[in-house]
Image (cartoon, rainbow, N blue to C red):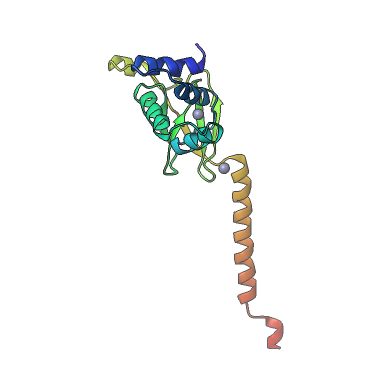
Length: 168
Ligand SMILES: [Zn+2]
Ligand SMILES: [Zn+2]
């Protein structure tokens, strides 16, 4: 089943009529790879389709989320994001620039002992896995920042040292 259809059939399941606007929203989500926030989704949709209603966007997102077709995630930047990538993957979250990199995995349940969930009678529909750290760009930046800080404090230290030559 195409990804757009997964969202559309979830909406149908909830008794929603498939309007042109809802189809546009589902299409957008199916092709999105950036873990957007709700306001970002609305802004991008409205830019391409000025006729789209804000209420419809938010209602549709809420419905999809309630049905488990869309998973809410939080990356510690104070905003709620949506995971729109249905393929098993791990999110690598940069603590500095909040960029999220999807890394595909064979199974996100590897090493998680999923049998225990089944023993508890739990039926999982989505797994989110986040690994926190620094992306390659921020690692470079961080090294430079540390180097700059070190250089500054070193220069201050040199400047504050009494010049021995003057004493003579
Ligand atoms: Zn980064
Ligand atoms: Zn992801």
